[in-house]
Amino acid sequence: MAAKLASERVLHNSDIGAVRLNLEDEDAVKHAFDEIQQEGMEGILVQRMLHGGVELMIGVTEDPLFGPLIAFGLGGIHVEILADVRFRVTPLTDQDAREMVREIRGYRLLEGYRGHPPADVNAIEEVLLRVSRMVEDIPEIRELDLNPIFALPPGQGCSAADVRIRVQA
Image (cartoon, rainbow, N blue to C red):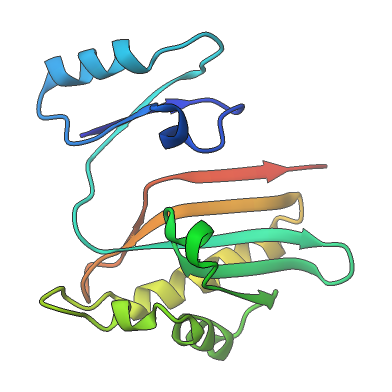
């Protein structure tokens, strides 16, 4: 299991030590809760621990001229350090999603490397298309951050480990 702080005020839980991974049992989860809890928290999120896969990010930001922009790249700390991100204006087409995935410098990680299996590229493209559709259908979404998304081996899809959405009427 994994446990992390639930708070609107904290952008990156790992920066403040508010994430615990590989919790084996109920006692470990209780101990993690005691360590993570702090004033102003909204709760602790406990979820299954994801193993393997490639960490990716998909984001949405509102551009004043073009409207919603979709961002795609390597996730976790890699997005901040490598800045290997591609952008497209919504709505995305199948071709846009295909190109975004293949244009990042980290695409080789998605093809499999040094004994690591390839990622489910079809599922990644599908998530991009669904996010694009969602922000078109729900114009109140001003920002969205799926980071990280774990791209699992072919046929196993993707799983988002952290999601933030900012809406505005």
